[in-house]
Length: 254
Image 1 (tube, rainbow, N blue to C red):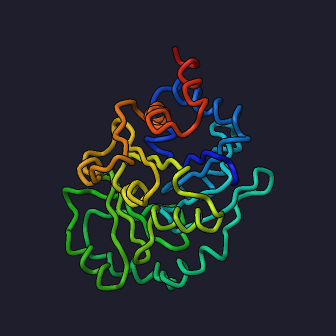
Image 2: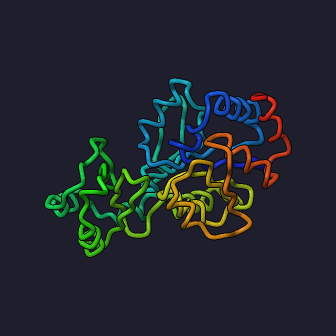
Image 3: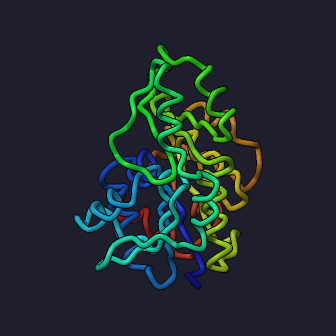
């Protein structure tokens, strides 16, 4: 990852957002510039979803992933799979301390939460109904030593204390000796907040969750894009002058 520019991007609504033409223009540009562009997916999705989506050629392959809302940090091998980086996950595992069953049991009495079927190693995730949800559930989880993260008014994640997309991305960048100044973090919902305020150049793409926009500090290194999804990423790349050939992407959609 000694490439001069690294894109660290959320998937749903961000890298996967916008028009088909905008997505294809960005993806094709990345593939043409793999010698100067590194790619990290920072997603709430699980490793299997990411591997299968890339294997089906819907997305370019990233070199690394920070997935499961920051609770998994892994290297991607297109022909072999996605391999957790033990040195980076050890602290996450210890913080979680096999708490899945205890969290499920503690939240059983609370309405508005339906556990997601995907098995996760260091988190428990729910589909969330804001109308039925009882806020006392978060107090219970806090008392157990974990964090609650609600995003997009649809999802509730129970995470190890202090673990989320931003801290895990920084842990990976440090592990790879990547200067945060050459990384663009991109997201669109509240679970991207910790990544967008982590210290790299960052963009909340057009169409982002209102609560994310409201929570973002007013800093020069955080761009609030007007363009949706993939086009918003390109808008920020150009605004921050992060790659000398970024404007080439625009020619593919004009």
